[in-house]
Image 1 (cartoon, helix red, strand yellow):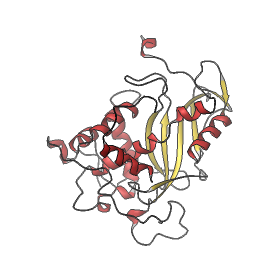
Image 2 (spheres, one colour):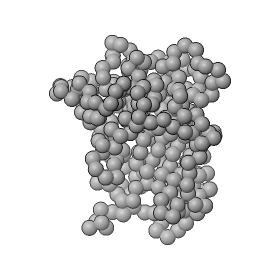
Image 3 (spheres, one colour):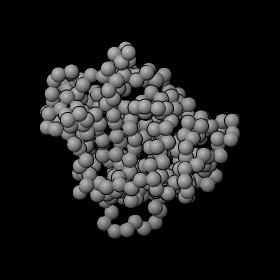
Image 4 (cartoon, one colour):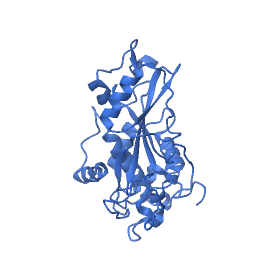
Length: 294
């Protein structure tokens, strides 16, 4: 991204590099009652999976063996981004922001609020307790709520979507390293790591598509630029009269677990997966500055 948070430590760099190569009602984790820090290295407690394992949604027969190394049934993973209407505090005019990491079913439909992993409503406390200060700083820069506190959006995204990812189940973790909440760290670390590789503003700018208050762009040109950039299919969503670009959804499959597996760009959207709603020509509007809202 053009303007980043302060340079991460070597430990954080290595954690995010790993990303690139690649039940009950909601409750508070026990960490909410503790104040000391118990460091957890993102992804370190996750299952160890073979490099040549099957890709999600590509098995013709039931998977035999370790289900912790195969994302199922939500094996179509969407990394979703917003183009917000205004510049966020501490942000920049070129920022696309992170909406979520969603496990759609193979046909493009989806489950939500599942019970594959516990639900949590204290995401910030969990990240702080496990020493994830750099990840939290990054999320407060790029994973932003349109209204209300960011933590409310994070809780919603985790409880709605992450609970439908089977490899985040506590049983999939190394028993010696597992503590309630480490699955939260892995979900947000993996989503943030993938987001870092998908600079939508740069991809569009490189194709001559930049924010403009009056110009309309062919939707096909935007689609082509982002799919060439990511190597896979992209779903575009618009607001207004379906003519104002607002969202980009990058579609992937996974080889291995969500935590440490390889994101494989999807070459098709599935029977129900084309949720795009944009008109053939769309506007890509500049962001409003905070002063313009006064």
